[in-house]
Length: 424
Image (cartoon, rainbow, N blue to C red; front, side, top):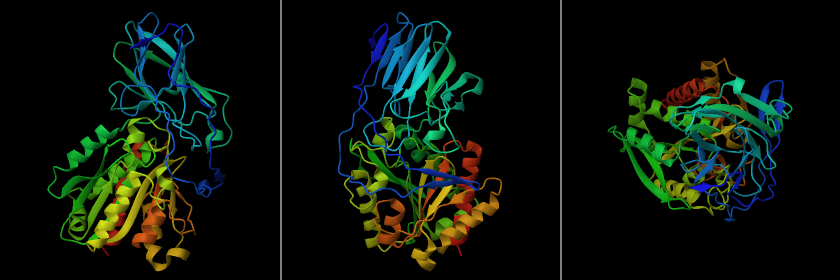
């Protein structure tokens, strides 16, 4: 335990410069982000945060980031139960996804106010609160105060510069997080829970930079050579994409006649947590190599992307044919990023038919489409899947604040509509 009465900072302060994509907004809703810049994916230094417990108020009030996904880089006691939290990125330049996660408790029940600050960023994620680290609810809006509100609807400029949150605390820790917590241990528990089904296996296909396992789920009939590929969580804070993927996979594993028939015809390969180091260390964006993994699908300098590449190459040598690939992500609002059919020709038409069918099932929320006409460079997963494995593929993005019941429904509908199309 580290105890300092008035001021605690646990990381050297560095000047943060963000490489922020411009997000576009029109009358038809969120239109997505601009073209991704080509960047080197050679490993670069990462500032690993100190993890432990801060002690304040004569050692009666405590903060901790010492758990999977925790991130709290510095903390000041401003008196009168007011604290200022500092959240910084693992390195720069970086996409602005200012992740935070900590827990707070006290020997004597009190109400505390915490000001959230981000060096050269703004407050993107609305706080989630939990008393057990598993079940989260958005903070009551009466206890949320934006400071210097942003402008517009989407993008980091629309977010407030700072926020103050007020929460009651007691001896039982309260978790305060940017999004729900799904560290590598919790994800592995979910993987293992599915693996009790006779048609599901899981195994390790590689190691991360910090030697964590890259797990793969294999679902379906092992005698078939027709397959789909699903990946998730290349970027640590993108939990909504993970939640939609989770529902998608659970639907494929269900006991409906449609799912049973589909599993006889197809094998599904799923990598649910591609960046376990970034997730467990509470990174904003990168792996422990200091790299955005979804820019490394051409250079393959990082072990996580290399693990999926080697696995797909092995399956191709075993004569598997991949008919679809999905990479689940999160962004400012729901959007699809397919490859334009002018470059994928007839092979890619199934992607747009799938999008149309999902929209017809879920007309209450319009989801926009931003198609790319560039097949190369293959630095993102979607391009690599198509160019190297002739696999129609899409980046499937869910909004940071998309309601969680709708996320689950969308994952379910997406799975049902894909099964229907592929079974044709």
